[in-house]
Image 1 (tube, rainbow, N blue to C red):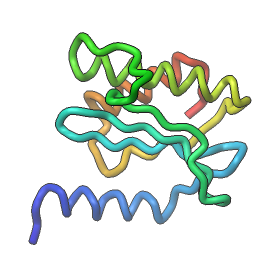
Image 2 (image 1 turned 45 degrees about the horizontal axis):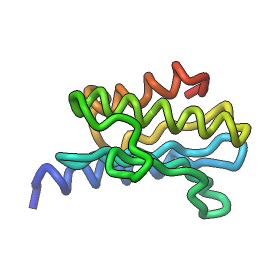
Image 3 (image 1 turned 180 degrees about the horizontal axis):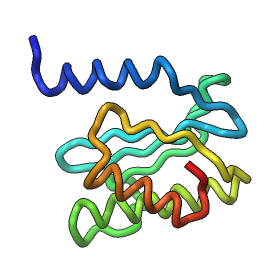
Length: 117
């Protein structure tokens, strides 16, 4: 069955075959639903999530504005938290989604926050 969701999952598996995160250079994984954006900073060697944030989190930064603006604000918060933990470099995992809109907004916010992707 070639639905949009299964195609995205296949793209994500292809990307994940090549991308891994370490403790010094973790993987920043994005998942977006119709309403929310979920961002995780993952150390694949240890199998642990180092940081995570979403639009739906209690510590939501900005609830007003477009979905792209809120995704960018989530990216800024994640970048600040990464800096606090001493992480300055990361590998970006777009999760099989196209690099535009909310995914691009998160990536640009991370770069503006001083994270090298």
